[in-house]
Length: 530
View 1 (cartoon, rainbow, N blue to C red):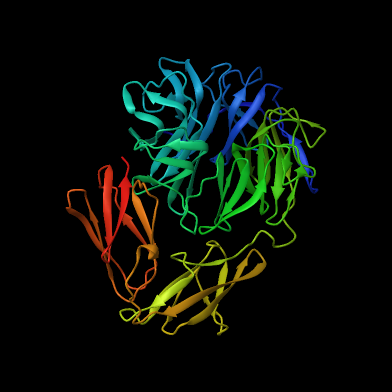
View 2 (spheres, rainbow, N blue to C red; view 1 turned 120 degrees about the vertical axis):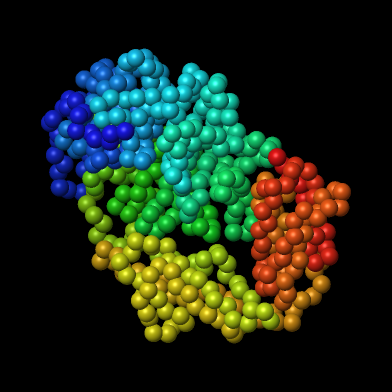
């Protein structure tokens, strides 16, 4: 497919210049009260706006328009009056559009999923979808485009339901059996969220969010081993600090180890309405209160406090996106900032931050543990430490106050004596200098291999889908592990390395049923769902 945009039809060529002052709002020309943006995406330096545009000058482009900060463009080929595009993505260099549109525009139907060929839209994949289908999410993960939304179903291919993938030539299913409300890639996993409890094809209930890795869905776990169960209707990754924000009526910041509750909303965050801008998190939705603070469907978090001053609109916000140093907002509003007429799309400008609040370094161990164990087989430990600011300009590390040294965002150190150790880092980026530190504990359990009891071993989740997690008292020996079926046949044999207090056992090859897990002579039962 061609991926050029120079053949767009120019509709409007008069832009409005932004004034160089703090907290400035501005509008886009050529829109009217029936306009609404539902998602934004930068494509070849043009802002693609998916949504609904009725009774405007874009008579051949009711679902999508383009904007380069001066000119407005039309995308001919989808003129389904009254319909909408909910999602837009760039995959393999091609512009992909998803939504509820369904109309014969040329010699072929163009419905639900479309690809831009440089001059007009074409049907993606040539498959006929059911009429009620809406494509709400388009997210690339491991070279495939993941497609989610309500009503996804293909009568000719019943495996294509709820959440599907496109690899550039064919569609395939993902074994996800309910509506996804949010999709996001974080730390090499695909996360799918909902604002309620949902069920996988094997019958296992997942609460609010699931993680997809190596072809299998599983719970998302808190650091204490319990599943994270809050509702999720939107997700966004802060790439500067490697934080994952998850929200619905509550908002959480996930740092790879801990879910931090940072807000309670008087409503919910909408599907494409979270964005980092000028180092702050902006959220939009149908809420008018954030942590007790009155707002107008939009709020800002600076890492410490929430605010809504000079923000917001007259109605719900459905999309937020940074483009050319401005924050674009979309929704069902007709005014922004309490006074400025704006029909479904507006843009907000702030000057660059004058402080360094946006840089929030931290240090974590690569295995997300705080306590490590010396054993007779491992009298010396090599531990990896990671800084979350992967795109920083400079890192200066120090172990226990020793001379700082320059390295990348990951370093290793060896330990052969028990004690409490401190790892420090100084991160430099864009003129800002910040420090962080981490303490770990090293214990010597050489010779400590007491007989385990059932109370020393915890299993979760139970029933299990694909990965059975164990927490146990660490031992100075390798501990044999086996899985036995009801007929007494051993199906899996493994061992827990000496010094480990956590262990993950892959059971996705097991059929549904009840099994016995035998650990150092102790038996515990667990169930597998399929």
